[in-house]
Length: 243
Image (cartoon, rainbow, N blue to C red; front, side, top):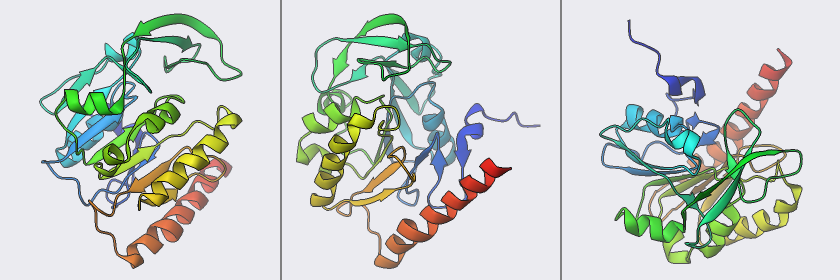
């Protein structure tokens, strides 16, 4: 009997063209065994293992904490990098949260205590893409504990427009002060022509940006994603909580 892969506990709707893995929704039709995925804030790389196993994608996983980077299993399709994605290339001092997931942040949000600090190499998105020699990744997953604001602010329009799609966890659910900055970033993506869908109801914990320059989606499909898929899944989440 085949052993259940550890990432399957974090994967939903894999038989759909809008899967959700590790609470990140993405558009799967363009993904093949020639696709490159950038997993920023990989934790233990459940997201990357799911995409490598399901679609055959080559995945580059960036994780900032030593505890998690040591637990990432590399394969022929998965490579790991011990960096902190940032707004510049200076070293970063992370405060490790008193939390089972061992995540770290430059400034922990209210309500979290620091149990340790760790200095790690900081790197911009542009420099990282140059380092791995992939300036046009098919999918970038972003879950970097609030540093996504600085990352996007330091990224040029050209870098952003070279990406097929982004699936982003913004962290206004941890720090309400992020809302204005997130609104600015959303407006920027829309001005660059991206199709944007916010799958979470109150905050911006699961946001999908699809680049029409790289991925063609017709108006009917956009309507299905923005309204039918989004709200159907929202109702399903509420139903699960009630149970």
